[in-house]
Length: 254
Image 1 (cartoon, helix red, strand yellow):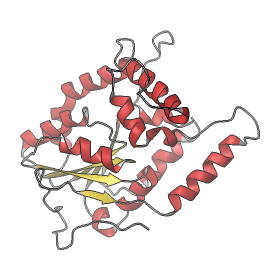
Image 2: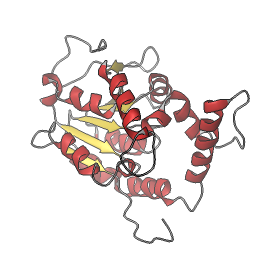
Image 3: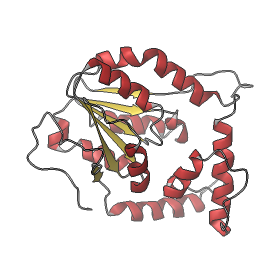
Image 4: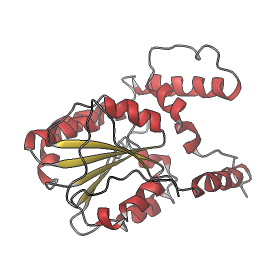
């Protein structure tokens, strides 16, 4: 297992302070087996018993893919991109443009829901809790909730889980230096995050797990229940999950 940069000597109910102007608190929770598992998954998806060949979506969410997804200003692949990088560039630029269209209702609808409900959500998150966001991305949406929590005066530790350390550094550095909300990065996969939450020092604290952006839609229908079940297994009584799902049933709109 990779070295985990936890801070020793911190009270159980509170994480070490993070100074926005000095260093960000990025915790490496990656397991050595991740690369092997990914290779096995690629091999399995490229040799299906039936149906089309596929590649895991995990491959798209490396550092470059995450950055491209946020770049709306470009209309063509990045200069100098060739081969796989050029294909990835085209795909991510197209995907990003779609998210900024009025027809792509998911992002704007979720922002509207959070603006309307952030205060209510903040009120039922207990003081001294941990908030763990799965696949944190650019933090634009979750910051609406963090602002609401800050207004309550509750001391909360927010953990952004993502695959790219550099993207965690970039996005966490853009968050305001809140007085009551402390921000941290978890560098790893969903499975790494689940294992991290099982650690004794974490299992004792109350937790709220966030999955925004209808990310669960990336799973096949038969995989989603298992994913949620695995998360529930590491939660304790009083812990909560906040899952953003697309409830639109209009085929034309979807």
